[in-house]
Amino acid sequence: MKDSYFEYIIVVGCSRFGTNIATTLSLSGKDVVIIDIENNSFRKLSKSYSGFEIIGDATDIDVLINAGIKKATMLVAATNDDDVNIAVSLIAKKVFNVNKVISRLYDSEKEVAYKDTNISLIEPITLTINEFEKLIQMDESETNVLTKRVGVC
Image (cartoon, rainbow, N blue to C red; front, side, top):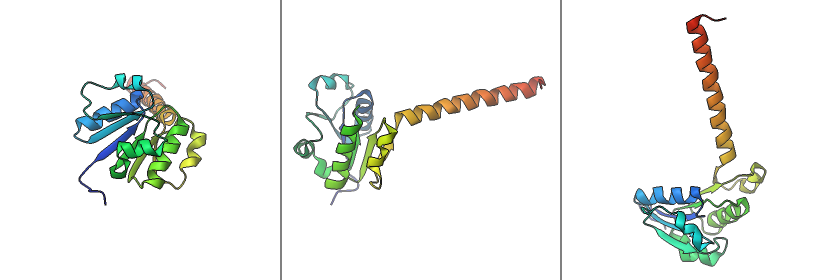
C-alpha cells in the first residue's frame, strides 16, 4: 500500500512543460524523477531541480519500473507526442494503478483513448482558446463600460 503522506512523482518528457512541472514539484519538496529518451533533453532542466533523471523510453515497462513506478503516487505524461503520452498514461493507470495520472494532449480527436480511465488531461489548444475567449470578452466588457461612462450609444 502506498503511504498517503509520501509523494513520489514521475514526469515523462523533458519538454518545456515537463521540465517546468518537474522543477516546480521538486522545489515544493516532492520526490521527482524525470524520464526522457534523449540525454540532451535534460539540459533544459533548471539548476534548482533536485530530482533524478533517467534516460529511456517510458513506454518500456522496465524503464518505468527502474524509475520507481511501483511506488509512484503521480505520473505526468508531458512529452510532445500524444501517442507516447497515451501509452505511458494507460500503462501507469491500468498496469501499475498509479493514483493520479495527468497527460498532455494536443489532438482532441485522440481524447477517446482516455475514455473511462480517470486520467486527467491538459489540452494546450483548449487552454489557449479559453484564454483567448476571456481576452475577447474582457475587451468587449471594457468597451461596454467605457461606452456607458462616455454616454455613447
